[in-house]
Amino acid sequence: MADVDQPVAQEYALDRDCTTLSRHVLQQLQSFSTEAQDLSALMSRIALAAKLISRRLSRAGLVEGALGFTGNVNVQGESVKKMDIYANDVFISVFKQSGLVCRLASEEMEKPYYIPENCPIGRYTLLYDPIDGSSNVDINLNVGAIFSIRKQEGDDIDGDARDLLQNGHKQIAAGYVLYGPSTMLVYSIGTGVHSFTLDPSLGEFILSNENIKVPDHGPVYSVNEGNFWQWDESIRNYIRYVHRHEGYTARYSGALVGDFHRILSQGGVFLYPGTLKKPEGKLRLLYESAPLAFLIEQAGGRASTGTQNLLDAVPEALHARTPLFIGSKEDVALVESFIQERARESEKTVMARS
Ligand code: P6P
Image (cartoon, rainbow, N blue to C red; front, side, top):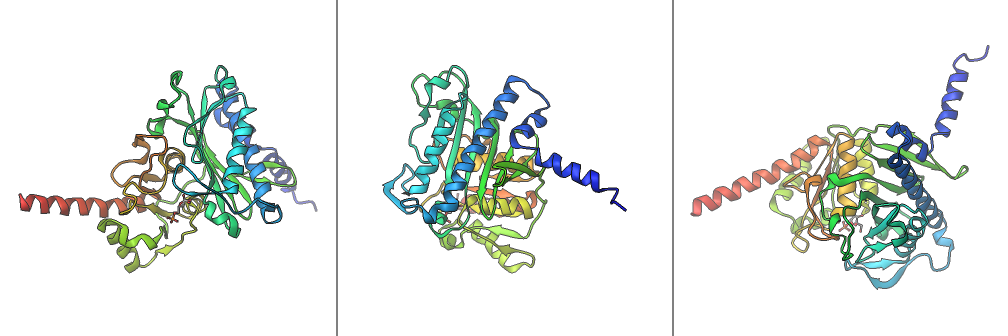
């Protein structure tokens, strides 16, 4: 007797296989407006860049000159990996052909890259970290890419992209690519968070999870405890708390995208606090923290600088950094409670001395 559910399951499987990223964006917007078409085309370009970089990463160990350092230092003061440059160039090449993106702002480029021929048509700016966690590249561990899309405001006559120095609510789309055992693309255009998995046999990103929600609380805290003595006492007090209480476990891969993806999937909190050497923290606001903050809020979680909602933060410069506390709302609130407690104690001390 044939399984009566067979046709439905088969139909569902076929429908899922046909839910590509570009189709999903149009479904999300339930419109074929110019902006909807633009966003769908932009996401398709992101997917193409991700496929090209995934292909390079999967064979990097076999390709002469793919791995290792270039010998240069980028605007962040970090040693540049050959894969950083390759990935950055892939995004430039893919979006030059897009006709939609007028400017590219990348961790790897001090100034934005302008594509003047696209400006009359597409007034979008792509902000991205082409390879996040590149210290993992040469040892075949997970790396990622983070992207954010904003609409250009004004004509940027003097080429300083000042209109980008606005808070994270100005983002119209954000997401990341995780190059792990499989290559996943996770995105939001403000209608929930959705994940796609690259099917190499199809060469397509196929829908794998819709409307992802982060648990209100989770067991994971993700932080580089090697910086313990560089942190403010409030953060050290939080770490002492999770050390002494049941139900917490530490996970840290050294690549933000992988650590964030674990938090999004299982709940918990990722922390990159300010340190003595880097009081503003290490992570960049416009193309690392703000896109992830956009996603986590869409997934029902929170992102904070420690003193304000991350999406409210306004950068003073293109490569501005900010402390980042992001994940489940209860776990981010717990970190903030230690910061607020410390601030109250400091205030009392100052009052007592005055
Ligand atoms: P640390 C990678 O260089 C990165 O920008 C993020 O991907 C990662 O979360 C962080 O830096 C790791 O920094 O200081 O812990 O090595």
